[in-house]
Image 1 (cartoon, rainbow, N blue to C red):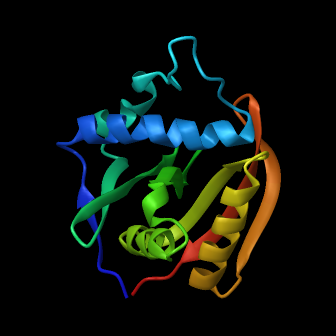
Image 2 (spheres, rainbow, N blue to C red; image 1 turned 90 degrees about the vertical axis):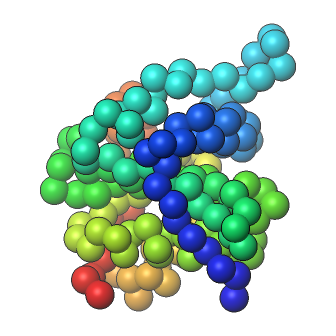
Length: 165
């Protein structure tokens, strides 16, 4: 089994921003982001501000065998602060399909037992498959899923609870 670690990214926003371009590139497969005229998949870095400005947001870097493998941005969901939310989650392609994302997810949510949700773009079927599997294995298939608006986007909302211990 691979050694997976989460390390706080509070002092490493630059790393998250660098990885975010790869994350947006991967999301482009679902048709959400066009490639810009400059050849980049752009995003607004201000979207990440809350993770460095608020105490109810937690940015993490994911490492596998001491090599950077991705990031996980957790928060209290603004529309329902009683619920934790996987705001953004990304594993570099080099590490996908090996169970590393699932183990990183488990480590992340175990830090904060309670009510959780994960939101997935409707078009992102590979991510939906991953999250159903990861959440299902963590909760013994005890989760609910529905499609709801999240701002201006309809998304899959997956609701579940993480027990203490």
